[in-house]
Amino acid sequence: MSYKVVVAGGGLIGASTAYYLTKSGAEVTLIESKDIASGTSGACDRAIMLQSKKPGPTLDLAIESIALYKELEAELETELEYRKSGGMIIIETPEEMAAMEHMVERQQKAGIDVKLITGKEAQERQPGLSKDLIGSTWWEEDAEVNPLKVSFAMANAAKSRGAKIKLGTPVKRLLTENNRVIGVETPTEKIYADAVVVAMGVWTPKLFEPFGVDVPIIPRQGHILVSERMPSFLHTGILSAAYIANKLKRNHQSEDPDPFGVGLAIGQTHSGSLLIGGSRQFTGYNTETNPEVIRKIGEAAVRAFPLLAKARIIRAFTGLRPYTPDGMPILGPVEGMDGVYIAAGHEGDGVALAPISGKIMAHMVCGENSGMDINTFSLSRF
Amino acid sequence: MDDMIICRCEGVYLSDILKAIEEGASSVPGIKKRVRAGMGYCQGRVCQPVIRDMLESKTGGEKMPPQQRAQTPVRPVLLDDMIRR
Ligand SMILES: Cc1cc2nc3c(=O)[nH]c(=O)nc-3n(C[C@H](O)[C@H](O)[C@H](O)COP(=O)(O)OP(=O)(O)OC[C@H]3O[C@@H](n4cnc5c(N)ncnc54)[C@H](O)[C@@H]3O)c2cc1C
Image (cartoon, rainbow over all chains, first blue to last red):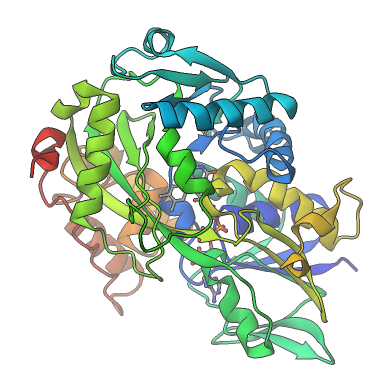
């Protein structure tokens, strides 16, 4: 008899976990309250940027994740728009230059071959960039992928390997017996399992509240502007140094000069639309767009690419990044509660980290050795 | 029935939409995320009512799938105009 596992949540992380669990031979039921990629994974950018990760465990995870992405299109027999595009972090001020010099030094020590290049070199690599830039980083290994395609392809692959997928089905609560989770309850049924993986992104804490278990994931809102289709012109992934500064900031103080945490993150889809982000703000579960933030993101985009003044914006939306206090995801069991695991809290890195997170969870749940120190990402570190 | 274009902006066919519904899409955003219908220049102004009708007939017309929230900007706008105060 095979091992029964329920995965709650059908975003990038839940879909990936379900897929890798089926590969490990588990009998999987994926339960999603709305639809695959209806949460944060359907409201995000497409960057797999290693450069933006803090050197340390998260960067190590990202490196392993990229290795998985390279094989994924062949493995899933689906086009995911994966492309090794290279990436730049553009630098506009001397203060940013000092911060990026420091970051690049640490990344080079961590074995990443990032380089600092001049503003002129940046323009040669990416025509259209402003002449006012004083420099940029460059790393050829950064990549991009279509997160919607990844979510659906992982869910479909899990399904064709035998997983049951229940859409439009919220998990109401965890079923327990003597401190052990034995399944989940939905509005219509109780589903029993040997293990439950909770991959509900920013909604993860809700399932644990009734047990007095505090899961410190907070929604951190981000905006994205979408342009009309344009001829393909973005050759690489581009972030601004301001974006990195805001990402690494652990909390926004009230006297913060930029309460919206605006920094540029720009990419182009295969269809030609530009995705222009972003912002970082703690606004609870609110997903309304804010015209002030949209305008500031527009300014950042036109500063970096003056020609974008003539681009038409057709839509703007927000997504909720699952923020954790130390910027690292939670991947692991829950102390004092057997049979349940958390895979959530990927903040702005969930696209990049989806494959490796799913693989680690599958190994952990099925008792296989993943070769990683799981304590690093466990809930008990908080 | 012969295949026909439902979303002109993104070139999405009836068969694509039926396939998305078969895969589990039960709302306008669910169709949009799977096959891009309504993601283009007109933002679904033309195809959304048709897609909603299709969803309704598939679900036996019991519940009206939620109308997609109008997203700012309501009409395509030049970035230049957007950032000018
Ligand atoms: C603006 C923005 C830009 C981003 N850009 C990037 C980027 O370029 N690169 C990158 O790597 N990352 C990026 N991210 C981060 C990335 O999008 C997230 O880390 C990732 O999508 C999180 O995936 P998830 O599966 O944990 O969460 P989600 O996708 O939110 O999935 C959780 C799922 O759980 C479901 N759910 C909720 N409650 C229940 C319940 N009771 N029962 C069952 N299901 C439930 C939800 O419906 C949802 O589908 C960005 C995020 C934002 C907001």
